[in-house]
Amino acid sequence: MNKINKIMVVINGSEESYYAGMYAIYLNSFFQAELIGIYVINEKALNDLLKANIFFEDEKVDYEKEMEDDARRYLSQFKDMADKKNIVVRETLVKKGVVHQEILKTAEEKEVDLIIIGELRRIVSLRDIAYDEMEQVMREAKMPVVIVKKDEKIEMLYRNL
Image (cartoon, rainbow, N blue to C red; front, top):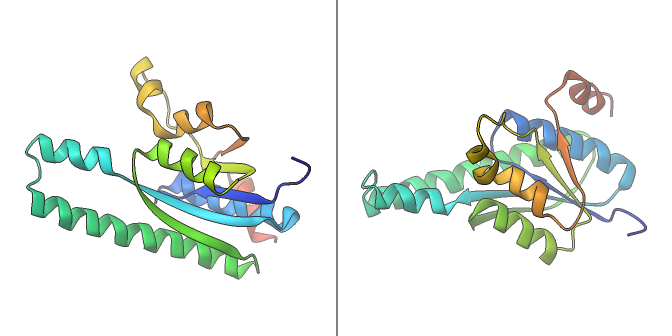
C-alpha cells in the first residue's frame, strides 16, 4: 500500500461513530481517498429477539424496517457533514448480518485501505471482549483500523477544515 485510496468509516448512530465520521472526513481532506460509509444492521440480534419470543415475526419486520430507515438517516447525516467540508462520500452502504463479519467482508470486497471506527466500549468482563463487534473488527481486520476517541480535538479538526 503506497497510498490510502479507500477509507471506510463505520457509522452506527452512536456518538462514538459521529466522531469517527468527523475524523474520517478530516483525514480524507489530506488523502483525497474514496470515502465509504457503512452501517450494519445486527440481524443476529433481531433473530435472537424473535427466538426469545420478544418479537413476533411481523414485529421483527417492522423493527427491521425502522432500523433500515435509521441507517439511511445516519449515513445521510454523515454525507451531509462531508458535503459541508467539500468532501465527497463515494458510497454509503446498509448491510445486514453479523456486524463485524459484514464490515470485514465489505472492506475486503471494496479493497479498503483503512477502516475507521468509533471509540470502543469500556470492557467490564472477558465476555465483553468476545462479543464486542468493534473489538472484533479491530482484531480481525487485514488492513489498518483507526479507533477514534470522543474528544473535542476531533471536533476542532473537523470544524477548522
